[in-house]
Image 1 (cartoon, rainbow, N blue to C red):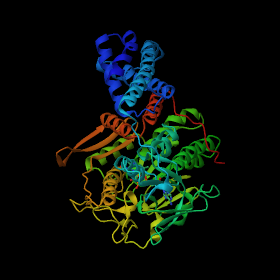
Image 2 (cartoon, rainbow, N blue to C red):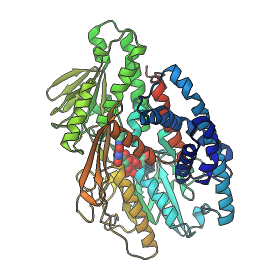
Image 3 (cartoon, rainbow, N blue to C red):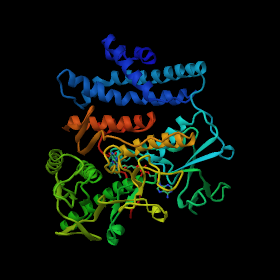
Image 4 (cartoon, helix red, strand yellow):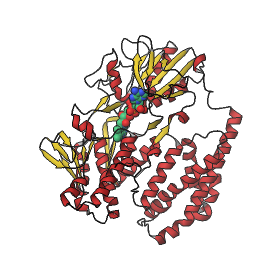
Length: 555
Ligand SMILES: Cc1cc2nc3c(=O)[nH]c(=O)nc-3n(C[C@H](O)[C@H](O)[C@H](O)COP(=O)(O)OP(=O)(O)OC[C@H]3O[C@@H](n4cnc5c(N)ncnc54)[C@H](O)[C@@H]3O)c2cc1C
């Protein structure tokens, strides 16, 4: 707050209205202080990060919100941009000053009150070992919470093993595929986010419950470096997530693009650009149409968001291909039921479908994918000539769990009791997409979403801590906060649970829901630096066309 007030000196000359500039400076400075976790002495980093933050704030406030507030529509003309330029300078200077001042105040506070984080622990000297498998939402949150609970306990070590070295923020994955966001901006590095957890990038190939150890595969970076291939544990947390499930359809597994990982999203984006390049030099209209037809299987959140993002992307870049016309372009969503988005109420799902249809997306409802060949997608009620198929229609818990002698549900998820412990195996726990968790209050099975994985991780960390101290574990209960889905350009659907009236929900659609989506997910994206990078991408997207540079050569 103090830093915001001091930095607002930079806003006064460029925004005018001194009182409002100071109030705004304090508000932004307070929000920055709440979400940033400055590292001691990182003045240059803070100056750069907070200075850069000035750009998206300028875009959101000076270019969009202020004109809207005074009854004018925001304009992007060169003349308007020239008029907004002094405010841009003011916001960047404000951000830079805010970064330096808040860093200085934080360093002074730390010197007076003592260091914030506990030092890293040596695994070898620890008596009890907690190993977390999987660095996704569940695994990373478990490690964060355990760090908090065990801050004062040097007798316990925490190790996180994951085959990727960053947490992937999947709610924004469709925006990477649609070229709105840079891939690395939605991935938070695990090493720098965790303070006393030992991070090992490795692929677990076996879990030996008898010997109480995890075995890493040959491809793991630990081999040859003198670090252990077998990782012993006293407590093991399974947070291995899920994989695409093709229900035994070999051709679909072989030819379809997946949509689960960052690499999948990058590949989809590059593939779409590749199809445009090929279509541009194709003289046969029917071949061109096949190249420009993008089929997405699955009408859940992932499929709908991807269809919306690809439709926007494809229509946004067609101007760069003078031989192609937008009528030749089709995004088709195939869904086995009679309506998309079963997670949302029917009225919102119909709204989403209608909006997408208005923008050119075609729907094949009550239709199942049965096969695919290069150039054709076979459905239960016909065939579509298309060179692109993306599969989002099924997931299954991580296949590594099949090898464990534990109880699993029909999908293969590990059954846990209402404290998230695996029955009959002391010290074994499971959460997230790989676990079959029943809510202790309602008895309902929890859905495989990040929202639930995060809450389960918080309870699980408390329970591991309780067991270490010989206390009683608590049961898991969580009421969903609602669901949000972007259906395309500045349009979304949101169904949020009313606080204190859990059975009631508030429904929003259109631009307001889209702004809600962006605000809520931006606040959930871990790390101030990632937030700023994403905000900058969104700001750049407002003013410039989508990028069609291919980052992978798919020929
Ligand atoms: C496109 C898309 C959009 C989504 N949007 C939303 C949304 O808007 N809201 C929402 O709540 N949920 C959303 N979800 C669902 C959400 O991503 C998952 O429910 C959530 O990631 C589950 O968390 P988890 O920790 O169980 O698994 P994950 O986050 O998948 O993490 C599993 C981790 O285990 C690692 N791993 C796997 N196998 C091994 C191995 N053998 N050895 C070592 N490490 C391994 C993986 O690399 C990964 O880091 C979305 C999912 C997708 C695919």
